[in-house]
Amino acid sequence: MLEIRRLVKSFGPLVAVDDVSFTVPQGEVLGFLGPNGAGKSTTMKMITGFVAPTAGTAIICGHDITTQAIAAKRHIGYLPEGAPAYPDMTPADFLDFIAHIRGFSGDEARRRIGGVVEMIRIAEVMHQPIETLSKGFKRRVGVAQALLHDPDVVILDEPTDGLDPNQKYEMRRVITTMRPNKAIVISTHLLEEVAAVCSRAIIIAHGRILADGTPAELAQRSRHHNAVRLGIAGGADANVRAELAALPGVAAVEPGVGAAGDGLIVYPRGGHPVVSEIANLARDRGWSITGLQVERGRLDDVFREITGARPEPAAMAAAA
Amino acid sequence: MRNVLTIFRRELAAYFATPLAYVFIVIFLVMAGILTFFVGNFFERGQADLQPFFTFHPWLYVVLIPALSMRLWAEERRIGTIELFLTLPIRMTEAVAGKFLAAWCFAGIALILTFPFWITVNFLGRPDNGVILASYIGSWLMAGAFLAVGACISAMTKNQVIAFVVTAALTFVLTVAGSPIVLGVFQGWAPEWLLHGVAQSSFLGHFSAITRGVIDLRDVVYFLSIMIAFLAANAILIDLQKAE
Image 1 (cartoon, rainbow over the protein chains, first blue to last red):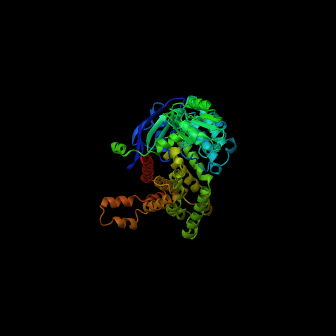
Image 2 (image 1 turned 120 degrees about the horizontal axis):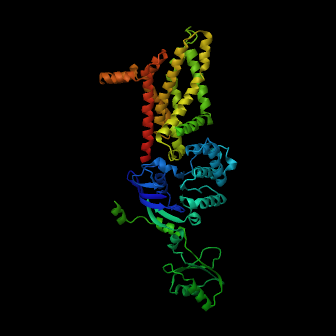
Image 3 (image 1 turned 180 degrees about the horizontal axis):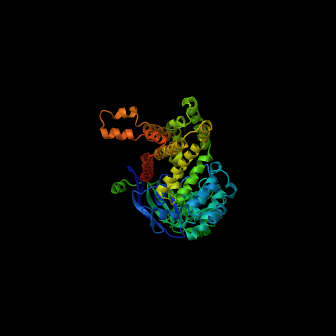
């Protein structure tokens, strides 16, 4: 439904988005991750036709955004960064304006507005000027506006920014509910959000795609993937740690951080499961285990590892 | 066309959503009154016409019209709604036309609210109402030209104060283009045709021609072409910013 073809955007000498390509089929929620200034918003602005790409294009339901902008825009629901809305208008007037621009009027407009108002739960603020609304309500009005015409492609730039935990939960529920019929792209820097709603994640930094996969696949790249969190009664002495480290599948043993100060984290070699080796060892030595937990991997580790690395000088020279 | 109407309605409502509309109308009427009755010597002249009223319109517009036009694009840019607005399925021409027509209609409302002047003059004597009607139409056309210039300037900045000041300066120059101040700049070096062209292209010249009671097609075409030219530039400027 959404196809991004080799998008490039340069601002003078600065390349903000550098040859980004991906496709999002129906039913997919793509999480767009990256540090601030990575090019997430610029990419979204190009997909939605607000910024003209230096090269490349985006195809929305068969319409090229650079040549058939109006047709393409009809299929997109877009929440721009910061959820801008006219401050003097009430959500009721604002949504009415959007409904008319989207080609609905009369009963149809009322029905559509009623639908999103119920889905996004903004009924109580419908007649207050938008400038007086809390950050969370403003964001929700922005999302309501994006979903009013039941678009095939939904682009949400930080949909849960400024929401409290309950509102975040609600927003994720909305995204998950509409997922089957749409291609959805959300940008976020909350990694828990990716795990919660995304079927796929793309990590971008310095304008380039650095990783692309399901959240589980990405988590597997973490050194925590298949690591074992182990609690031993009476604390783990140096002897225990040495014995664990001597296991063939174990790469490292470190003290765990957290309330149970006596815990250990055992990192596997090459991400292979080591929990049975550890369990066997514990049984043989007669250790009294108080906790045993296998980690699936941490997205934030992977994120830091991938985005923290600066591009190699050789790669830069090659690109230039 | 539907989109133009939708945008027009939103923009017109936006004027009335803030005190801007009311402040503008009150100041416009008060200033028009002061200029007409005190500076224009409306009563002392002893003539039943609205000449003293219309004479000051270009100068009123230089000061007040930029206040209407400055927000058209600059405000959208400052609060970020321009991103929302321009990603809606609307044509650039519809966006530009909707905004401009709302401002022009608002100027028309302010102009219509000067009707007490017309009642006064009809109460006091027997004016040529044809001339007055022509003058009103001319004044509204001129307001459109001012607004088109202002909309175009507003598209260049996100700072409304800059939009105001630049618009006031530019419309002042366009107003007095036929006067010795401006012509002096061109005198001596510019070819005759350019001098002639500049002299012919002042708001003041075309407006005063209309206030004499004759709506000459050339004057109407002049104001309409100013509007179209600046609105086209407005659309191009907004489009160019997409590539930046």
